[in-house]
Image 1 (cartoon, rainbow, N blue to C red):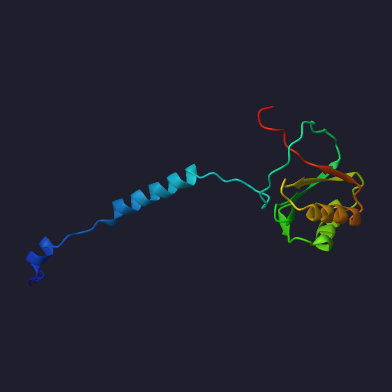
Image 2: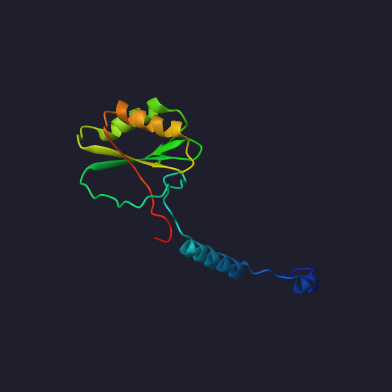
Length: 143
C-alpha cells in the first residue's frame, strides 16, 4: 500500500506559514499596550477654572461638586445634565444630600461658562435646601 500523495513535488515547494510566532508577537504587543496605557477618571466635563489668589479652606462638611462647562451643561458626581435642567439637578442634589445637615456645594464653573448656567446651579442648590455655596478657582500660573 502506498499512502503518499500524488503532488509531493508541488507540496514541497508550497510556502508554509507558521502562525504560532505571529500570535506570540501579537500577544506581546497587546500586553505592552495594556501596561503602558494610562487610565484617567474624569467627571465627564472639561472646565477651565477662573483664577484667584485666596487659599482653600479645610472644613469637615460634606462637599458636593457641581461642574459647569463652557457650553452651560452641568455635571454632578459624573452625571451630566443639559443646559437649563434645574429641576433634574435639584432632584439629584436632594438625593445626594439625604439626611445630612452640614452640606455645601462647590461650583466649579468654566471661566467662559454663561452666567445663567451658574444661576441655575445656585437655584437647584436652593431648591435642595443647601445654603452653603462656594466657587472653585485656581491660582494664576507663575505664583
